[in-house]
Image 1 (spheres, one colour):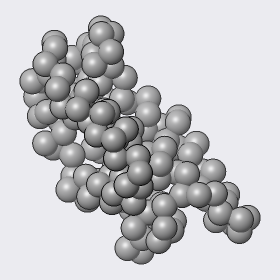
Image 2: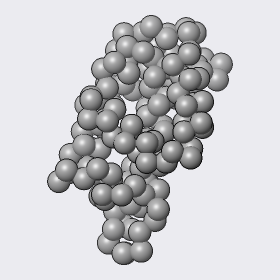
Image 3: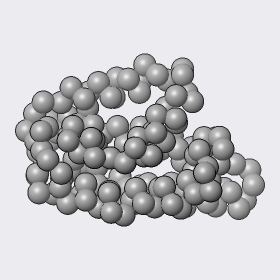
Length: 141
């Protein structure tokens, strides 16, 4: 899950840093209503636009470039396990999820499918997000 090659390891570290400091910061405004937290619709729209315009582009054109199935790899690493389940949070806003690029959805599905022993856990998270009907669930991006 964590490569031994120092160059590949450095790339995976970069992806993990990007996930934590860039990608993930957009998710609370979109999805934390699932846990009963207040969400601001304007902030959610702004965060979603940032995902579409910047972070999904980085994922697809940098980390998954050269037709890689996973971040800099043909097998999943810890970086993919950090990213893919977090993308599930966007499902709390069904119209936003509908606008996530197919390639990003396919990446998420590919990573989650690689770990069948954790399907129950991934399904539980997805159920929480898809089942969210609170304030802003129907917000248009």
